[in-house]
Length: 479
Image 1 (cartoon, rainbow, N blue to C red):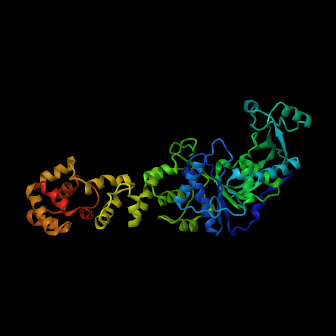
Image 2 (image 1 turned 90 degrees about the horizontal axis):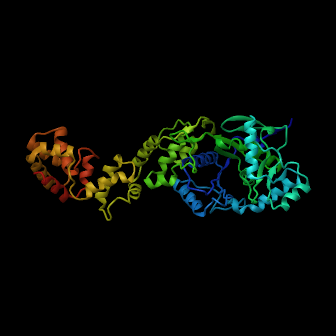
Image 3 (image 1 turned 120 degrees about the horizontal axis):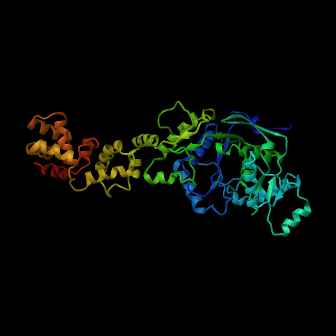
């Protein structure tokens, strides 16, 4: 029995890794895609290697240029810079599979010359009937070899009927495909359990098994981290590359990212896209920090930059168990990312809700007050209205605090505001001197009168964000 080993295993473990992310432009990327891209980027960066971006657009019916451009924009927004790919072509490109047809045809010719492929004229209905029959008899479904031994005359007869054939790879019987998975360790598959598979579709387009493997080898990719749903593809791709005398990468199959219901995140299942999270105001730092911890264990607990993640990333720390996406955890990282925003970053983040032409001191005070209390820009909108809009109506709790304080309290507050501007300490001092109040009894009526609410951001910076005339008018309503 012949044994097939992955020759990529002989590469030095500490050699610079060349990795890739290869999305199909059939929809916006979701967080499962992003995590795959992130892990490949980090693997390349930790070793001083290269990260490639390849667009797998051979599915002409579903691939769209606008999706491709949106995917590129989303990856740039995340800070994922590729060393070669769209916009950064090199001698191993082009990096769109739709532009690599001559290369595929050359290798199809080599396979045909070696007798490693044959035309398959089976229809989709015939294949489905065969699959159901195998399942009914308790056998694993695989191609039954119907067209494997057709004579030249039989092939010519089918072509004469106008049947366009697919091209199937002739899997050698009685062999074993052995390889070491970067995540799951040693793997061994009998070729008898694989079945002949399509490498070129009837429309002439290269199938995934073929184009994906050939491109990895021809682009010099040394390591591929991808979802565990591709694990069954690896033996097929190793067989193709062996037949073509091309060096395969080392494969690692990462646990799938599951939604709260336990289903894999996927475009076809309507997974929330990265673009949707962007539109809600989630920050790139929050998203990548959360995904870094999903299925990858690390001793680093704080918010990390991509460079810091690369230093902390280790393929051996990738887990085999499915990783469950928890939006509450994303919220936690979002809060931390918002807390780390610089003033300029915060201005840009909140630009859609902030008033135009806001004075710098007022804006700085508003950001200081509000950022610790918001996760997304829309969370700040009510406070924009409270601080910069008309005097707010009081909610039930606020009315209670204002009514209990009485007119004398607010008369003292107005006097303090007139004398000191928007200084909370001075206003509170004037009230304390006039009423003897302390603690919550001193400060809660102030908050209620100024904001209309009994809860909210820290009052001192919030007060500084208001115009002095507005502060006096809000207090005077109850004096």
